[in-house]
Length: 463
Ligand SMILES: [Zn+2]
Image 1 (tube, rainbow, N blue to C red):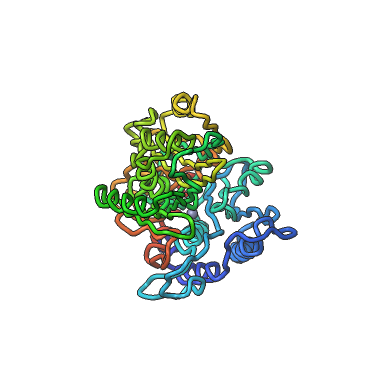
Image 2: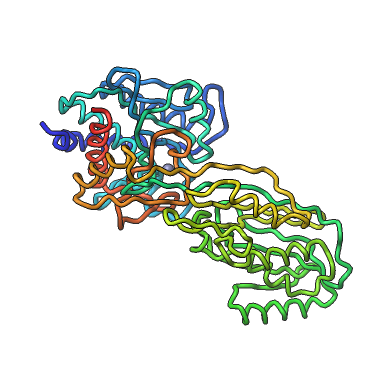
């Protein structure tokens, strides 16, 4: 019997397995003995390895960091890598986030699409492949990570003990195929504020944003002023003139200026509105007198503003494959003595870290700002004619009848950390991406379609 009919026969078991795994709340928790990421991720891994073992696969648990189900023999293996940990559920759910209820052909719950459903599709796809009697020349591993949402620390553990796959994919983004992922830098700009204002107006603090990789939707400043009413009045004039959402009110001996923006993912800052920069634009118009904090605000207003591609900063990198660089000022924390600003900058796939940081460093030289806590991930890029890309395209087109366009994204998937794999699915073109949002679901039809695509892909890569 052909592979896809075998997948159809497994549909009910696949749906039940996804429901069972979604019911294990696998948000990262306090580490415990033998549970490096807390109880939830470890319990989810144990459950999935039991399911895989019941399906007849050899299973290995690497100390609750990561586990895998394996089929076949040989040295080299094809890998499918997904994750069992989830982000917190947040609020606004119409069905309970960990009950895996089915409504209108959809399984609802945190992790249904990101990424429990898709990795179970791959596992049951492999089972269907085995049931179909196909012969493979390479081993296959379905690998279950448990820390993707908080740094992918389990992959370091894995790669210190196991060889990487020779090819494969991670079902943790969207279809058709992601062959490019931008380079990502995350760091703080830090400045000591020693020259203070002697003006009648001064800033006591500025605080805004939650994460460097999110566009801040809120920022506030505490301003000291002899004439509070005039600061409040100029704030409202400024808001009227610019259309920025700013409010000002007296509180104790301060004027609190509040800026409201629009949140968006740090990889797509052009979809948001940066509350910190809106606030800076106003503060730059106050008569703050000569001071380090005014220099800092002026610098950001001049070289960043509401721009999200780094052009005025002198780092406007761009290429045809992945488009423009993205620039996000995510968090600000300024008190009277010190300023810390957290940035998330993602550069195009054909550019280098030096092409970004050399002009960046030049721009900040002489400003007193220094870079701290630099984290960097190289870009990922598989050319169009790469064997893996061609194989995935062939299977995708055969299975869906659609052209398998190549996509480049600003986000970072497991493919950045695990050699020789790219992101492939699970979200079909035109379908909503509900990852990390309320009311996340997976359509049962898509779960099955994924299992078919993944089964046929594994066959092509391992035959
Ligand atoms: Zn994911």
